[in-house]
Length: 170
Image (cartoon, rainbow, N blue to C red):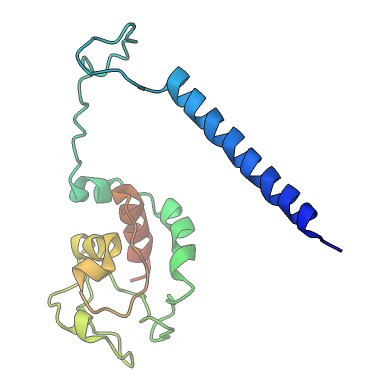
């Protein structure tokens, strides 16, 4: 089916196509690249983007206590949907995570019948709104070794709203 002449034509065609692509790349480099230019001259035309004149806007962080004071429990109820896959609000009804009924102000690792991880057992104190906010922001950083797989809630206002919603279940 293929003889020597057919194979020679195919190889010659591939080599010719490669040569065309290489010449095209070289021509584009000459036209559009810095081929042969040195850095000793200024650019012909510069577009002013104003980036040198831009003033960095300083974002003042509001203390969590102030956010919690004006938190909206209704907005926190919508955020609760993320949590209810693992936690329950019924007293004593543990799921994958401990029940969260009365969690605001409750001592840490005090949900009866729940097997807490060593990372969370290492923390002490009560679940104050500030402690809950720190935990919800980044659980792995707050309690290294925790079983909680949640990545965290970055927005402080959302955390305050969620904690305000949890506080309604006391």
